Structures are given as structure tokens and as C-alpha cells.
Image (cartoon, rainbow, N blue to C red; front, side, top):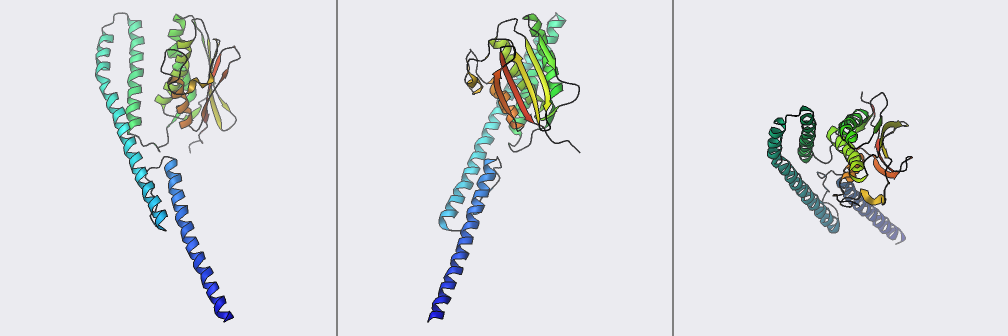
Length: 281
């Protein structure tokens, strides 16, 4: 009798262990699929096995991934459609620019037109690119210097000076060229829009250690009244509040961040920090 009882207990323990392992395996699979979806992989699917409750949860999670993917696809399509619609007035604008007789003014307008066209092309490419794709690698030093040169014309007209220090070598960061240009333009444009004429700018790109690359923009203006201005849609002036948010998202796509603070000149400091990508073989 004692032997029978022990045998039944042993069978019960083995059965409970088997059921527990199956349940744990189902929960782990569900958690793994959820983690992949959270990182942007909307192709991940949970296996609909295990107890009824786990199967139901897995099926609903899969439906959620399909729905989110569908909504993102529609959003990308709308963005691409809007960008395409802007091409017609831009073409008309270019024809008007070609008729400008002042060649210096015409060149500035052409440069601005080209920047807008490039930004639209980037919107279309981004709209068609899967969110999980890794951004390209771009030279931060060259991009910063190029955009500073572009803004230097407006700086002279408003009595400003842009001091540029980007070192002598390339500074690769994980961002597309158009996104990085838009981020630098947002940082510099914010100064021109929200500080009085005569306020100077210091732009510096550098490597800090082995794993961080930083773009710092300082000014000698009044500084930030509110360090939450980076929040999308929030601005202390008559603007959309999207400029610094664009810069923030560019840094975050490159595994970095945006930081706000005070500059040594008494004005505002904006830093874009990027995780330095590994060297290419």
C-alpha cells in the first residue's frame, strides 16, 4: 500500500512538472514575441499553443501587431502622398527662381529650394522604409560644417557670427544625411528664430571617448526659459515646437539623445549625442 501511494505521488509530481514546463514554455514564447514587437519587429508572432488563456492572449497579441502594422503603413502612405503633392508647387517655384536676375539672390534661393526638395525626398524614402531598418552612417563633421556655411549668409545679414569647430577627421554617426541636415538646421534655425540679431553661435562636433560623438550648439542669447521646449508641439514662441523634437528623434534613432542646458556664453546650449557606430571592415 505504501509503495502504491509513493508511486502515485511520483506520477503526480512528474505530471505536474511536465505541465509546468509546457506552461512556462508558452509564457516564454509569448513574452519573446511581445519583446520583439516592442522593439519594432511587427512581423513577430506568438505561437498559439498551451492553455486556453495563453492561446487567447497570443492570438490577440498577433492581431494587435497586424493592426499596428496596418496603421503604420497607412500613415507612411499619407506622408508620401503629401510629399508628392508638394512637388508641383516646388517645380513652379523653381521656374520663378530661374527668372530672378540677381544671381547671388538666385543662388541662395536655389540652395534653399534644393534643401526643401531633399527633405521631401527623405520623407518619401522614410515613409517607404520599414521602421526596424537601421539608419545609414553619415559624417557629422562634414554635415555640420556644410549646414553652418549655408546659414552663414543669413548670419551676416543679421549681424551674427557662427564659429565652427568640427576637427580634421570624419565623425561617423548613425543617421541619414537628410535627417542629420534637418537636425542641424533645426538647432541653428531655433537660434535665428528666437534670439535677437547680433547673437553669435558656436558649433562644435567632437568624439568623446570611444563610444560617444557629440554636436554642441551654443549661443550668447537669453537662454531657455523652459527646458521642456523639446516636447513636440510645445514652444515658447510663435512656432510649431517641432524643430528640437526633430533633432531629438534624429539622435535617438542613432542610439543617442538630445540635451539642453546653459552655454558658457550665457545663452542656450543644445547637444546632440550619438552612439559612435563600430568601424566598418
